[in-house]
Length: 108
Length: 115
Image (cartoon, rainbow over all chains, first blue to last red):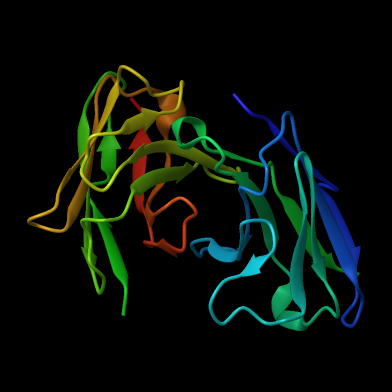
């Protein structure tokens, strides 16, 4: 199975900061990568699919990049609503979809 | 508006069975792959199983293979997960999701396996 490793596990930042979360795949997944945001007690929300395509109504301060084995999620200017846990997910192989372990974005 | 509504969760003893359902509305159900994703208390997301739109391609995580069965009834716009031989480590909130990628999620149904 393809393993997904996110870093960091926890990130402390302030409103207005630019932050980047990294996700590495154990083998090439081309651009078959998605990013999700999850807030406590809520279902995850799709932010980005195919590594860099923004889902509907996702603010433009979110962006994704990368291909192959290394990917990043960037938030250009943190807003109070962005403090949450973020997960990457590979879907190169529908037979074994895998998530990263998550990155908790906290208020500094 | 797309809605996914899970049901069927509850408390069950180890070795027991449960059947989860997910009623879909607001989109044309049959062409799309559907999946189950779970989240143990305080833990991350774990993909459980996916099924193609026609139901002819089915995939499972190794952790549930041979114990869980995914199915769908396109005439009823409903996704199912039959869970047998349940273990304590299957305790989680089970989400139904459209995809992958998962652009719509239900609110989840809680499965607790405990004696």
